[in-house]
Structure formats: C-alpha cells, structure tokens
Length: 408
Image (cartoon, rainbow, N blue to C red; front, side, top):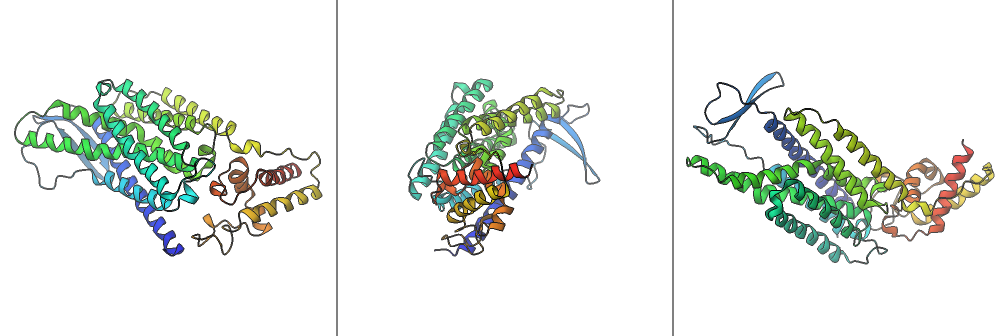
C-alpha cells in the first residue's frame, strides 16, 4: 500500500499536470477559433489564400494567413495542435482513476445511492465514458449530423439523460465529475479520431495537387463546433466537486442543463464578435437567467432543507452554549477522525484542506464551512461514511441558528 503522504503528492501532481494541459488546450482552441472567425479576404493576397488577420502582441506584429490549398512550400516544422488535447484527457483519466476509483469509498460510492465495490464503480465509470463516445459518434454520423441545430438539441438531451444515469449509481460529486468527463471524452476523442485524421488526409490531398473531399472538412467542422460550445460547461462541471450546493441538489440534473445552456450562450457571443457579426448581448441575458435558475434549483433542492432548525425565540447565551455543546459532540464524533491534527482515518495523512474540527475553537472558526458542507448539504462526511444521523445534523443546525439569532 502506498504511503498516504506519497499518495497525496501524486494526486496533487496529476491535478497540476491536468490543469496545465487543460489551459494549453483551451487557450489554443479559443485562439484558433478567434483567428479563423476574424480572417478577412483582402486585395493582393496570393492565390489560394482564403484570408488573413493582423495581430499585435508582445511588441511585435503578426500576419496570419490561411491557405485553402497547399502552399508552394511546406516546412518540416509544421505544428499540429493535438497533444494539448491528448495530454489533457490522459491526465484527467489518471486523475479520475487515482481519486474517484482507487478511493471510491470516499469520493464515488454512496451506499445510500448504490452499494458498489471499487471495481464495479470503476467499470461503470469507464464503461459509461466509452459508451457515451460511441453514442456521440453514432449521432454525429447519422442523418442528424446534417442538421446542426437538431443534433445539438439531441446531444443536450443525451447529456441530461447521462447526468441522471450517473446520479443513480454514484454520489452527486462523482456524478457531476463523470458528466463533465463524458463531454471531455467527446471533445478529445473527436480530435484523435476525426479532426486530426481528416486534417492529415486533407494535407496529403492538397500536397498531391488534388481537391480534398468536402466531407472531411464538414466532419471536422461539426466536431470543432461542438468542442467550442461545450468547453465552458465542462470547466464548470470539473470545478463543481469543490462546491456541493450544485451537485448535492435534488435537481442537480436541471443544474447541469442550465450550465450547458449558459456556457454555450457565452461562447456564442464571442464567436459572433470574432466573426464581425455584431455583439448579441441577449446571450448574456440568457446566460444570467440560466445561472440564476441553477442557483434557485440548488437552494430549493438542497438536502439540508430537512436539517434546518428553527432558531430559538430567545437565543440567550445559555441557549447558544447548550446548542453548541451538542453540536461539538456531533462534529467531533463524526468528523474529527479526519479533521484533526493527526487524523486516524486510514489513507488520510493530514486534515482535508487543512480544516481541523477537533477542538471547540476550531469548530467555531469553521462554522460557515460546516454550515455549507453538513447542514445545507450532506457533502460531509463524504458519502456519510461515518453515519452522521439526521438528528446530529439538526443539532448542528440548531446551534448555527441560535448563534445567528444571538449575534443579530
């Protein structure tokens, strides 16, 4: 068994690599979308040049040109933008395996949802990602692929169905993460199986002085468009594991839908701007409406609604102290085995996020975090692994309510 401290470092290094590669992929993707949409056809351009764009950066000027046919000379240093995508997916897959499969009892499996073994959780997760790619590719190659809008609607519905399916086997955190990983798999697999191979065929055809099959460009363009509009929703879903109000809601699938629409709307605004087609400000109104809807769904659907205690009508110091004593007892008996100066839970070398709850002073100091993680949501303990009861959560809620009343 790996030393917990080494395990912690491995997790952080994989996460670090994943973030770095994701920045590189998203950055290059957004740049080329902007470049492609901003190309202008000007007089005097060489034959075969479809457009150019002038840019300034770092004190220098850049003249970017897009060739629609093979240029007279093709340098050996031709750069293919593909490893940003591949390395992002590979590092992300390693991260899922390391955190969500090898530590499934903490981060993936909730017996209240579905009693799974580590290997069952991993098989469902990996199988779900693979199956989703086959479904996505099949839809893109079907007659639906000729109608971009209709295909987009069907894919949106499929995302919601998949998100719901994940919530039926995993805890909310893992369900959100796997929904994001599913979309990211579509994106990266499109680069690997469609976009790059088609580009290579086009380059070879042009170098041979022939006309490329238009179908190759259409297939790649369809996938690139999906990648463009799905980037922002994927980022949200990947970051959501830190914010339980989203994934712990009873309406988490609806939240996924609202975020997908909001992210796509924001990208549409920038796509239109870069293409010189004006600024469709309505997209920001739509995005804001969807985000507010997501917030509302998180509030009305939070599991902590059952925990909320009525604040005592007279929150005297004695009442606050008595409720605090009960809360301390509940927290220390259910949380301090991990959140302590020296955690005793196997595999946890230091208190998660550096949060200690082993003294009344530390509990008081972290009260707002406790409110979100254990009262408003049931994010902690993870998967309720220490079997914190509803009465204990209510005791914590009563203390917080009494304290709020006393300090008004």
